[in-house]
Length: 112
Image (cartoon, rainbow, N blue to C red; front, side, top):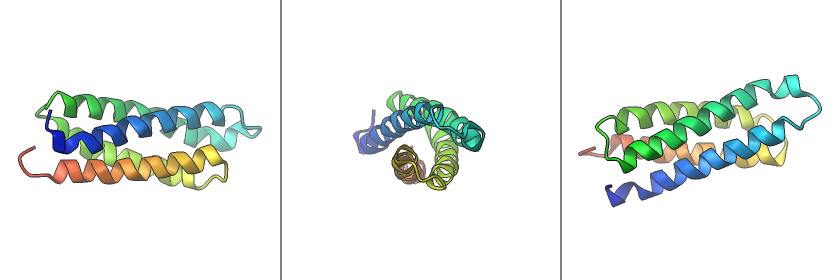
């Protein structure tokens, strides 16, 4: 595993955990219908983040492509979470945007 990508792997796992927490907390909100898109994106984002971290760790030839997709989904999830005032959503938005940045950097790195 290329050590230069450790920060991306860590960001992916941190984002996945934040998305899991956000989805679980959103399910406890009174207006569940308002949180539907947030929950949906949280679940998808958490899954692709874990998969991206795994592909990077495996030094997969598909890691770059997957990280590009991960960055796109993280950006979308982060933007959705940022719309909500709940602390768990705001924390998730930050984790998502950080992960998107790390994945873009990783995907654009030479020799990947």
